[in-house]
Length: 207
Picture 1: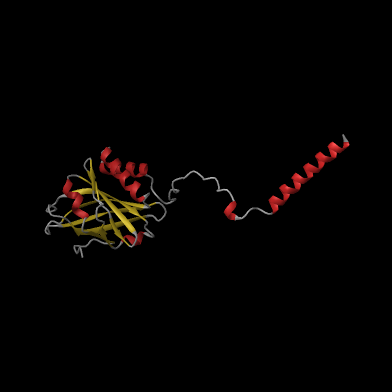
Picture 2 (picture 1 turned 30 degrees about the vertical axis):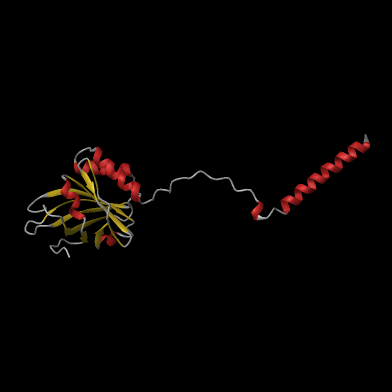
């Protein structure tokens, strides 16, 4: 009996010594089992960004109508570019004496940097003559400061999207993306395909 107990104690001691040695001398990296994969998660939302429901609510109030098309267009933009850290609400129209030009004015809204009055000018694809006007919402992405909006933004090929009476295109400059969303008939969709120039004061010069 004593021999059996002694033999059992020897086996236990040997096992403990082996476990301690393994803990102190882990196997080489190549022989370690792969770590357990963590479930993929979407990137965190921007602290200064605007969620799609906030944009839809602002758009519904601004355009004066509850439109499924507006919500779909905003969802399309946010799924492609994420949450904007600014948006513009304003009005624009064709030049009264210069055909093929578009002029607008509105307010840039941001989460942490305040609001800013802005004006914009740019070429349109015909039809924009006389006093024709439209309400416009623009989503602004990766804006480093409010003053950074004051530059010329060129169109992104293949970014045009139109559904339910609302259309959007995308413009970019220096890693900033501006996505105008306009209501009305289809030709308004092409009004920003050339470029838009934002200025702190109104001007008739689109160049």
